[in-house]
Length: 225
Image (tube, rainbow, N blue to C red; front, side):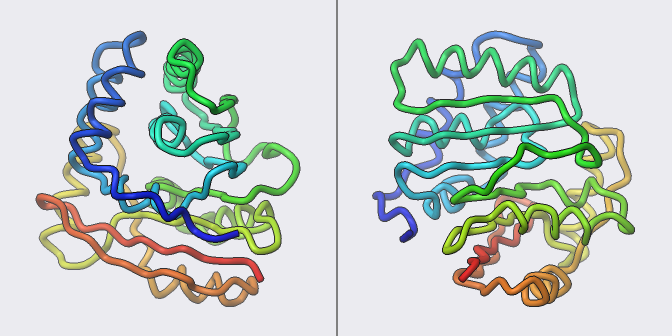
């Protein structure tokens, strides 16, 4: 299964798509979906998801990643789960807009905590986008391991999280989460994540670091042989 070779989908285009899909639900949550595209480099993450992929989005929040996939990747099937009831309700309303727009994607959202049983089966793509820094340190490796077990042979574990270095960027993101999520986050150095992947038999097919405004991001594509 090759990575998607689509032309670059720009930030402005993704922002317009988010505004079209998030028209119902709590005002603040919808606005966060509209503007998160300016902070998170989704255009670099979406690139690695091929047409026709099955996707499991772990800790999906209000479903923004799957929403953007639905608008850019044909014939997608996606399942997202998160522990937040309001976020899942917002994601379900978004999926109704996906259907109204006639997009060739089938999305499902479930309210689940990461400690509960996950959706069964394996997937072409399992995504962990800005999840692990919200997980307590003693559980981070086990969440990553559970995610890896849901990756099909020759599928990918798509990982994006905030970098713990440089200190300024890490501090600004910590302030961001204190203000918006009211949570003291726990960074995972990317070399730890790379080591976990190797222990689980995954290979690194893409590695990239990105800075947007004062936020520093680490992107990895781990492939199961």
